[in-house]
Length: 125
Image (tube, rainbow, N blue to C red; front, side, top):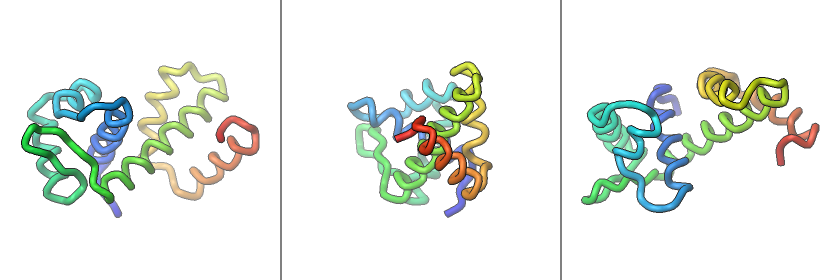
């Protein structure tokens, strides 16, 4: 299941916003990702056409199963990589920004090893 990095960012944003409760709207996504509303509209159209999200008549965005699968994978990578960088002494804001870049490109093997090490060290549940 290979999709573009920007699509992964949109799916992760939808997941994170939905975890806060309430409906997720395009304007919320635009604000979170610091992108324009037209960019979000275009991305939502593509994600909807590819079966990653659904939108109701009020514009509320919902992750479908395959969208949720990708969003959860990317979000897990983001949190684990952020934890790793912070454990190395990287300031939180920089760690989050760097993790966002790394989450898309790191191999499954490297990610699994990082996650295992953090669990062994008691830094992850």
